Amino acid sequence: MPNRLTIRPGMPLAAAIATFAVACTWVSLTPEGEGVQILRAGEVSDCEKLGKASSKTAERVLLFARTERKMREELEALARNEAAEMGGDAIVPLGAPAGGRQSFDVYRCQTF
Image (cartoon, rainbow, N blue to C red):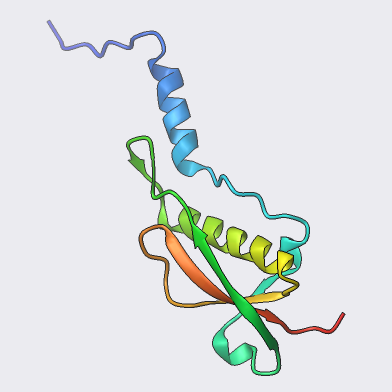
């Protein structure tokens, strides 16, 4: 008698929820944050430094590790939103993300 895979009620839903949770970005970029660019250190020499923004996000959702790309996107969105609140229009990452955290310098490059 061949082995049969038994699918219990609720298993497909649980699998769909787990897939959704791992794939999703939970932070939305605000309209103000959309106006904040991500630049490199050499691109902000004519800009005014306003301060720093620190971002933190979850590395895991339930039992599943999140992808580096999704975490990076979320960290950048958080930093862009925070920079906009500070009056900035550009951020520069201070190193690579680590442990679900990343810091950024915040700049104002355009005069309003």
